Figure 1 (cartoon, rainbow, N blue to C red):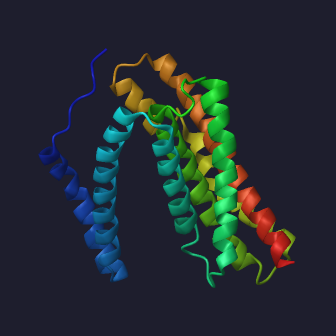
Figure 2: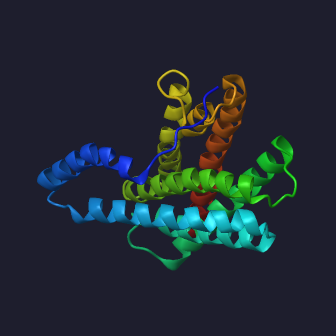
Length: 233
């Protein structure tokens, strides 16, 4: 199998062509270019920063560093998930923090200790990337659930609003389950194949990841909606 190709920074310029086109259309149709520009600049800064940070963390091999990174990710994910909720009461953030936190602890423990059985338990090579996947899908699920819940509760009961919001939160991950292997090869599987891993091994990893993502999205949105429903009654 061929090893993964190295990507030079200068070669990344090619991808600026379609990005620039979409940015131009966003400006012409939506009258806003700052959001797209800010999002890409922030993405570049964050990824470069985390790249250098991970190099240091992997070499240091300290459990407290891994805990610190995961905690920062939790706070950031909880905050971002509440961007679309208005009005923003403080307890919204606490509920999001609780929902995402519980989800990450449960699913991260199951996959690292039950499935992969990694040692040491805080191994940053596994814990941080897997935690990032769980945070990402949980954050998006809570964001969708909270936004839809706030809209539906204006016309429907809290229970009806919760049901609709829960369904909405799971649409992206359900679509991913329907499409995986047929429409798309997910990022983790693609990355492993490009780096020379046997496709069947990559498939098994991807199955575990898809199960983890569905469970995480469902748990995070369900906990959030259950807690917000209890408080709002």
